[in-house]
Length: 265
Ligand code: OOG
Ligand code: MG
Image (cartoon, rainbow, N blue to C red; front, side, top):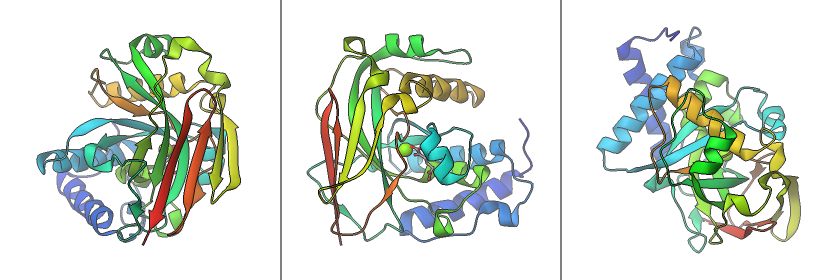
């Protein structure tokens, strides 16, 4: 691993990111202060953050892949997929409006979520392995909220901020991945009744199952694996859409039904 941060630096940066996440304020990119910070350093900070949240009582429920579609890579100016972790505190429900109190500049993404029934381990996990280990797939929405000013970041900084993770919501209609071709699933996203984005699941690394395989192989590089019963968000299909208090989002997925989300003060 190509790391430049000392243990003290990792702890310091984790506290900085954690403060910004909990209280909802922005911080400069971590690379401003540590220009030699690498991608591996970013994952060290992310791991420290995960361990702190877990020891404070949050439960690890799964992982997320990010920057897995061209649309997202172009929007964010980074062409390397990333991963982040998901805890029970990030899970929200469709019927439960999301409060803007601790949010900065949230954006919404529509994604295919996978729920696994078998352990998956890298370093050579394939899309076929992922499909075999998948219990079912769900339509989902992710709320991302970068802790960096103007939603601008570089790769080590966004990884340290756990891939901008904020909330995720899944829809109720579970489907078996063997029942259809995931690649051709279409999705239409509406904000306050107007179509704001649309796409097909194939935009995500040609098949969202490839994003899950990438995630498992990335986990292996971090000496981790994906336990059975994990939820995995495979990454935004379309560019992320900014939202404000009062906005209503509905994502209509072909075959998977709809997922909706409302934002309040
Ligand atoms: C990074 C997180 C990207 C996705 O689905 O691509 C992500 C960001 O864009 O802030 O969650
Ligand atoms: Mg996402």
